[in-house]
Amino acid sequence: MSKIAILSVDDEKIILDSLRIQFEKNFKNKYLFEYAESAEEALEVIDELMDKDIDILLVISDYQMPGLKGDEFAITLKQKLPNINILMLTGQITEKLSTELLSKKIVLKVISKPWSENDLVTMISNISV
Image 1 (cartoon, rainbow, N blue to C red):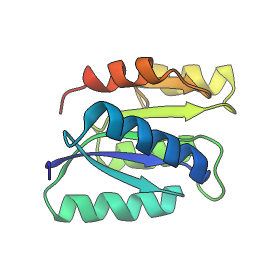
Image 2: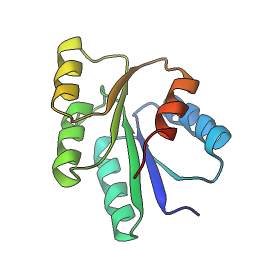
Image 3: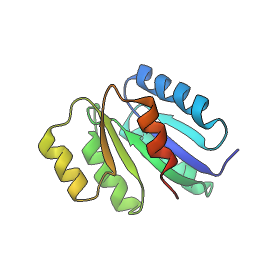
């Protein structure tokens, strides 16, 4: 198993299942893929990965989630891991918040749902640890 992980965070299981299918099809065993249904669960997964010395290439996070929202999660994550790459995958974010997250370099990109599989795969392929 690879020592580089991609973590997807979304409270909708169907979104996580769609990402899982696309990742397995396009990346095979290139990365370790992890999934979480909340920001709080994602923070636990990140701690586990760090304990195992597994690098995290990318976190793909929804914005609209119960508990910690995607922007709050991204800010918390950036404080913990300043160099982490974060994609916000959402259909609920305002233009103002999207611009703010991008301009402050909290997220690498904001992608609207439904997303283009090819665009997402290309974007991931262009990110390096």
